Length: 394
Image (cartoon, rainbow, N blue to C red; front, side, top):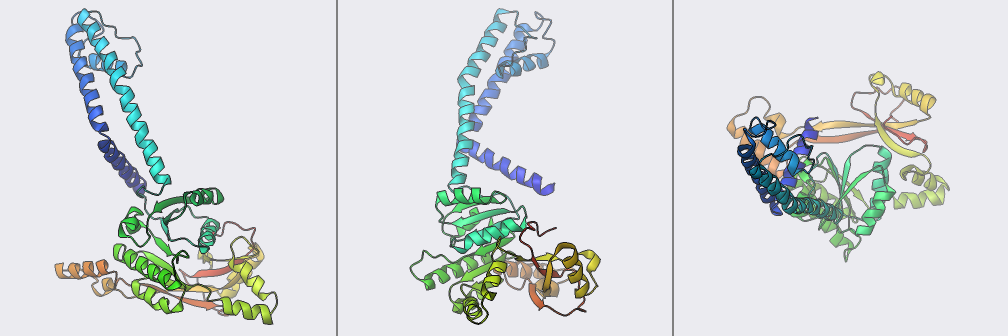
């Protein structure tokens, strides 16, 4: 509820800023001043001559109802000055209200056009950034759609408008948004509200003049993201394995090298015909059986790998392949645990600004760890499940 109220408040402030830019606030203030002023004239004209006007509240009620053209007719002017005030109210409405509604309409239309063009500013939180675009991007979106989570996904980069529209129809379950601009630009990433995002996926750009240039752009994007959002989880892609270390040094949590499985797939296709196709289906969303992770059920924490594998195979036809266990790394906040002095707070702040020493987590992988391996809370199961099972969160 708190996050929903904060988001509503941010949107309200944004609309107010647009209204100020379009001078709408001046029109609204002038309108209300005229309504209050004419209501005062109406009150002094009708008070004592009209049993329907007993105090100023009645006159103000008449003014508001008349200004909104509802006109219930329960209060009718009886004096000449009162009728002149009613006429002034009608003229005020006819002269100001069309301008007011036209300005409001133009603000919302302008906002919609800017949003569709990728020029709006993101105000929501806990979203996923997809920085850059290439042939892999569609598979990324397919995986997010299969995951079934209701995150906002913001595509950042120079992407054609018609492609964004196609993606919106292709992935109706995803809440897609678009920010136009260079994904290495600080201003572009700030418009995408990268500081409030949870995950960023950085893709290499096939449109650059060379693979080296594409990898350099990816490194620059990760550097900028890490400086702006020290706690953001970043997964990055590169063409050359030589840039894996550069991306890790820049702040990427995980790095994938394009085509690094090609050698294995070629060998599998040559020596074990059919194995390459099987693996490809498992790694391609929506084809054959899908490979994904899901948390260990609470009922199986402390029990054996065999117990959970047998349960899922019998109940859901899921095949348990292994486990991923998070191993937390010590950070500066652990060293400065307890009550902190002003010096400690200064050190902590400097480390956060640099995006270093914040701790974090590495992951231990246990593929087929053995039947008696004990499951722990927080483990993620690696599962191969039938394609017809769409909701892997179940």
